[in-house]
Length: 351
Image 1 (cartoon, helix red, strand yellow):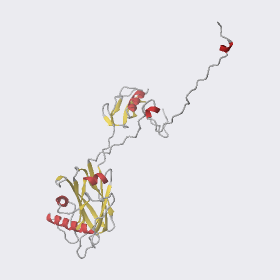
Image 2 (cartoon, helix red, strand yellow):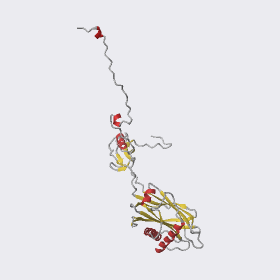
Image 3 (cartoon, helix red, strand yellow):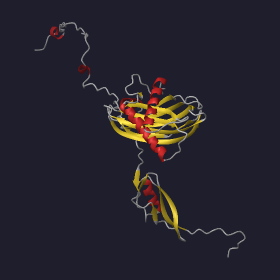
Image 4 (cartoon, helix red, strand yellow):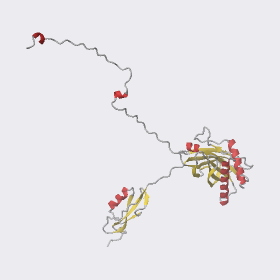
């Protein structure tokens, strides 16, 4: 039976729905709620490790200026440099030097580089160096074996006395507020050092007469901590002014010398890359030169045989194959070439 008109036009009643309300979170959502994967790590540049402490140090007398000589005009100066390496307890581990030198006749205002140095000082942790640089004005000396022996004894004696504490040198080891800038040794420190050094020299029969005397009583100790801090990579310059002791009547005024010392970590050795010379004998010139170039060498051709028709084969080489040379060295290869015909002499008619 078909549906009547009343059923066909009947409208379905509306269904009531609960109102939709949006809920805003009051706290931030976890990261996992926003990203389907874990967040990427924050990349930071790598931190370079501190450079290793240097193994050895170099000590040099870099300059000396005569502000006033001890003699009336010129001082005849002789120098000695000696260094002891001390352990943390003050024990002498090794003696370096002495290095001795005649500095010549020096007058007021004269400056020079003594060119005296001791390298490769191996200082242990907690240890120190005791350096002695002594310059004496000795007019009666001449540069011979006796003077050299006396200066060597002087340097060794002063460095030893400094290490034993019988000479209170200028101590920079562990000094509070030490700075890597030149410093001047105070007069109250220099004069006692000078008198003590004179006593050491007289103890080994180096006696002074007339205007002779010590003009540079250099004595200092430097700790490993300061060496690493100030002399790496260096150089660390220390300048001291040395006023002399009273000079006799008839001599010049009391001497005044200024000395600069340079301390630095021993530079690493320069490594020169090397290569073995390849065997190019019997190769064509093109292939031989290429073989040299491939290993960083420079080929230089030389005609060692004469032929009407130049050859294209390498006849020999210098250095020989297998010899180790520095990269970028030249290697001579021998070839055959046409004979050299000298030009005709002026006025000569060729036959």
